[in-house]
Image (cartoon, rainbow, N blue to C red; front, side, top):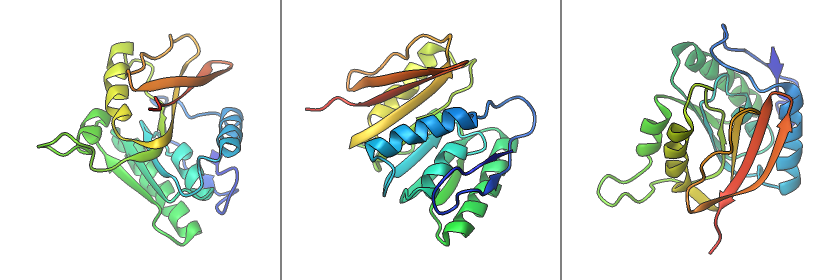
Length: 196
């Protein structure tokens, strides 16, 4: 059972996805990740997108810490149900509808953020979490990252969580890695839009 670490909903327990199809981010990794994001001051009032959300714990943590809008995207029915349960719980704690859940394939949902005629983004995000399943190939991840790179707000931050044995993601031309950190079996990659 994971929980919200800090913020308005701090201490709230979250439902986990049953089975072993998802890998929840450990509390140790989550605490280190959010300590870094807080020091960068990227959470307050952010529009957050949590892709491959699992139980939604990363996106929900940002809601507790002052994000303005959080969208959890997940395909697996069991995980979607858990996301919806957890989102309701956090929205109640915040007394505000900050968190919403969208069921669907990540690439399909990302495509829906673009205008069909102009291909311009209809919405942008300040903070994006990506914790794709390990079977996702490096090439598939590169395609998803390319779409992500086109919906980033000017000072956005992207966090990709992968197995520590996975190679560095293939970054699109308009995105650059700013940091990486290994925690046991997990490696976090941090990236932002190329400025100018």
